[in-house]
Image 1 (cartoon, rainbow, N blue to C red):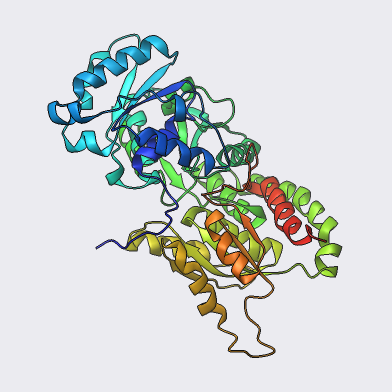
Image 2: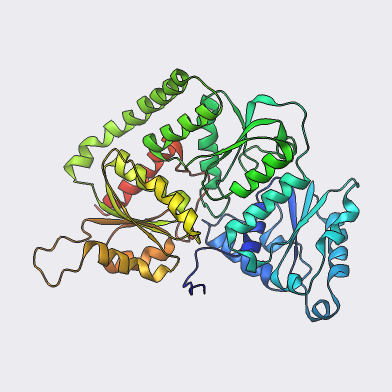
Length: 446
């Protein structure tokens, strides 16, 4: 039996589908769901994601059937067809995509029947079952990608040897997704490749439509987007690799070497790119060396978030910044096999740090794990606990940080106390931004 989740860190699969589609260029999601679903998702995807707004046509502007009692009793397919027709007339888009809520799936509405009339028309309409009971945000992201790769991406007979596709940085759920995608694309550009990321800056639907011409798909996750990569390979024959999300020198070097090997590049060239990035990166770390030492800015750290982000943050803190991330709370819903796979990304640190890993979706337990890891003072006068401490997590961790009088930076969803535009933490340059943010929290009250 599944456990109760207090203050969840994810919206449902429907929210994941809408969040993914709202940032796809000139794409119009059409919601087939009960009244209220769209509004609830809109609040979660805006105010808890760094106040990102509605995108091209979503959130408060989202076309919806607003299914009510009549459709529940007699079926809602006719109402859906009407909504599709009216949306196409009123909303200018290049792709229309129907997503479903729990209620219409429970009554058995066939959305495939509603969209198939557009198969050979001038307007393209896709659809997928995305009822919230299917899973959380990541499931909706995966469903949308698989549908696009099956029904939208065109087959290609010729491969472009200098083109790769990139996904696994989950838009909106990763609040810094746009900046992170740009930074990771920058790393691949240095290897000499063009990159389709579908959701990044300057992308178009044509990039997605012609994505089967790529020589490789790179999934920046061991979990999110892997099923979609398997579908892509099965249909279009493009191989894929998974690589851990990179932050900082050590994480980025791992990423570049994995990508370079999969692309058949010479090791010497990849190492040259890494050295150039390191020279730039550490030239800025030299500038803060004095203040770091003089003010004793090293901290014990608790990292809270999904398996993708926490492994990147922890390696950066341990091997680049010299902090002590001794406790990591991973908040994903992962299978036993996925948990073991995630553990592999928390090993082999050059610093020798061996973090304790905890898999728990319940926000209320973070404080308990901190107390367990560092122990209780028991009124000891010279007790060394979680001090000096620091918490990297979401807005949910603010309460425990305040109770422990520990500084905190929100870097994982939900983020309601920061406005995020193009900021990103990936790669070498993103890690410099993260270093600025972390150390600014510590010196902010001086």
